[in-house]
Image (cartoon, rainbow, N blue to C red; front, top):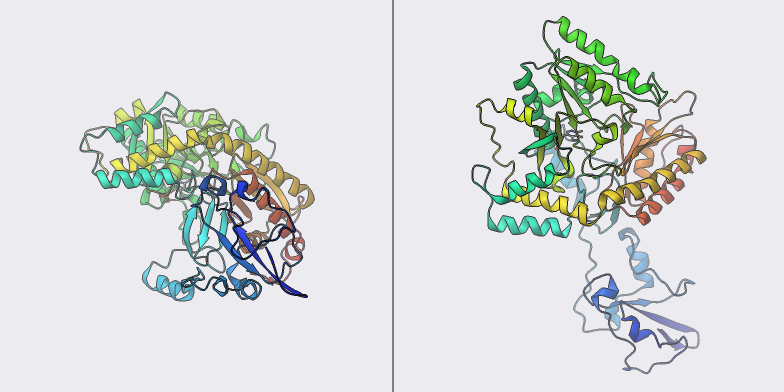
Length: 545
Ligand code: PMP
């Protein structure tokens, strides 16, 4: 509404969340007397399901805008907006107080305390850390109220704080939480639902509490059955933070603070068709798998036998490396030929994320002996699981009890089952396929325009792109990757970097990521790719963030 005060001054009031019906007959230029009803407040369904309420705002200047006006602002712009949109209390004096809903946490103090009280080997994202206090769908909210599009978190699989997961957990927590030493229908129902997502050979479930624990148990199974600890793993692979899992995680033992591969681990080169020695997609699978022969002969020469092989279905810490066609089939064949067992680590990529399939290993058209699950399984509730064949399960059950206090408890089982149901009812696998394709095509289009993007890869909503000086040298540009991630954060988009050269940007958002989210992400990526720092391959001082 325009409020003419004098011949040359008007102010305006803005009314949001009105019922559409009540304003359908209003006309531009229509006059209202003081106290006259102008409209009605809209019901929840026509207001994005928000409880009915009025957004009331005073405007001293329309800023040349017509029909729309900013109704929210970034916290750092608040003083400017207050000068344009004064406190409504001026007009509605009965209002008690309009609090500015910003109560920021003292970040410097918090960081200092965290450093004091928590282990020093914890890392923190971004040059200027974020204090995140809420989550919803594909978004995270910082303490200052700013919303960030989360393109990183594949744990909040069905969306941050999905109301059905929260309600299921709350309900079961209020009812009972015990362990697998009592009979409870939930754990059996959940195991059955989980089993139904696998090929029939994978039919026995063991529940644990994390991805690390799942891999730890899988490795124990291999040793119990094979009588050998000798494992074959992939370069830059990561499988967890426990003793046995670190022993098969080249990402750790070949990285900072690591002491190289233990004698009982053989490391295969990363089957990387962009940067590695074998780049022809037709032959790369077999050529990379051939390194298994050397690993096996090394193990056998030392007088022991092969325990098994462990590998991620898409290499995550390795920089979103998609395994070349036929790779796992050839690796498994060689490992099984000497009696070894094959573990597929699905902690990152499982539960429909790859779009075309529910499990990442299905991209390779193989069936592992053991599959390990974690991260997305409980949408943030700490859970893990090991699924194996009947033969493996029977051979592992040698008399020693397997017990995990929390693994398979009724609360976790209820949550896990709810997550599976949501993936199905909200068609999140189909969404990963569709939206992932849109995103991948957008990234490929960006690569055509910006040669600094050397490669775009991945499946579904598990994508990555690699930053290089040019396609001839493929010189990795880790500073550019870090710059892009930090710049995108200033636009309210969270991305992370990885890969042995730290020059890969990873994209693995919650599976409710929408087509609009893709457009938003691509729009800002394009903007950042046009910035001087990126155009000059990182050979400029960093002026931002
Ligand atoms: N395997 C893979 C492939 C992982 O990425 C991770 C975690 N990043 C783990 C296992 C270990 O999972 P957690 O941290 O839940 O123990």
